[in-house]
Image (cartoon, rainbow, N blue to C red; front, top):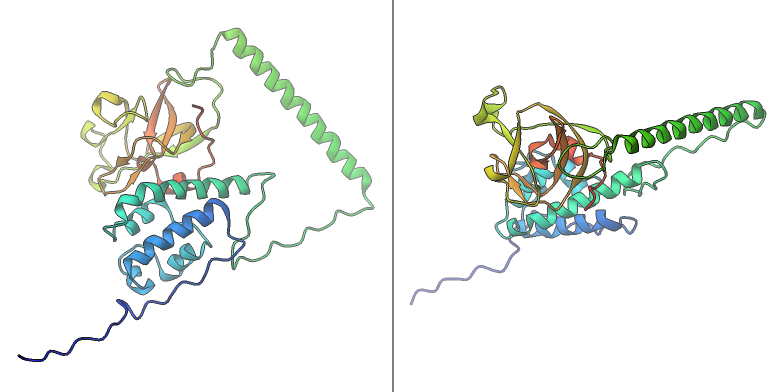
Length: 285
């Protein structure tokens, strides 16, 4: 019998460098997402150089994502996960973790929030103490701020009285209310390039009545086209998952007002930079 020497055991990818441990200051939803992202990345067995050739991102950007120094957008995360057959089933969970991490960063960056320290990020410049020899200017600013607060409160009170006298019940569904939770302009995005300059029904994107019901013709109550601008007042992250023509999918939905009615647009149908950096509040149950 012919002797065939066995190959010695060796790692699948000897060029791949192990990831450094996450820093202790990285915590909360951001740490949870980065930990899950690292687990998915570890299953791929690819170096950052190899990954750079398969994803629309540079090695430095991918390295920042894996170290928790920045967050990827949802479309890139989906492309990343689809490189692994075992990770694709966990993509909805990864997307949810990304949404939570993004919301945590947005909340921390809001006025009064504490921005978590990012490893490798530059320290903020020291705050300058106000000059002590100008008390009159400080008192003037406080007086102006107090006057502005009185005006805002008076305007808000007049608005409440007007709403009560108009008989609006402030319901969250059906006709659009006059006091939304937030106010943001969002831009419709069509993944099909051939449809981006056509305003025909075949190229329209459906607006749903209920984000928790299957995204089917029976649930479509309005339509929009690529680059249309809609006004949104809140969002949810646990609606039905919608997949676009490019294979991207998301369970995030935005509540919009169109033609005097409230409708819902899937997050995957919105420009991804607006989805990622949205500061709209969560919609009430």
